[in-house]
Length: 306
Image (cartoon, rainbow, N blue to C red; front, side):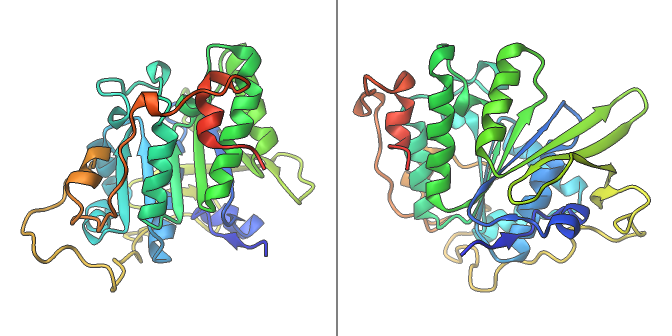
């Protein structure tokens, strides 16, 4: 049955009823447009619904925690309760945390998939999706992107992808490929000169829309809200204030240490108490053999498209 779940951005959820549960959504925008703020709204609403969440980001997890705190989202308590896992791309490629330089090893998707399944993740944020869909061989990119998006869909988690605003022909082509495959696509249009921001819903599968636009702003303690709309902030009211840790998931009482904000893939094998992680198999790069008819070996990792 097709159902919706809130994105966590009030005006969007009011207009569309949220995003499709178990499917993906793409948010594109330049630096400073609010992609991470949207991600944190999505994350916060999942926590309010007692869903387990995972956020994979290029930024250091501590920076995400600071950003979340400024918006009123208690990331630390969510991590301690086991409802939230923060991972950095540097776990995949140590020392490489810049969006434009990330090249993931062939077994990266298998490790991500195992964490999602072992931790019963229901909401996934991939901030940014570019490392998963970029290939040096442009002729194979379309098949590669198709395989990746379908593999994520098969996991059955509600997923938010973010992507930088394209500024080159290959980047525009990547965004077009993604928009063709995801059911919902959103652009955040930011003009730094006058600090104006516009939310543009480019695509909502099942609805005949004409790129609907909403002016929005971002404020501390409130997050992202519609300007002059029903979502305009009230004093001392946080968009995330109603989050509380799930009562049936508590921090490990046997340990008196605070779990770190960022957990590496090895930590799920070596320290299984903090998140009640099931043991994960370790994968070497050589253990995943590229298929001769698949781009760069990655689609063979993603699995055959259905």
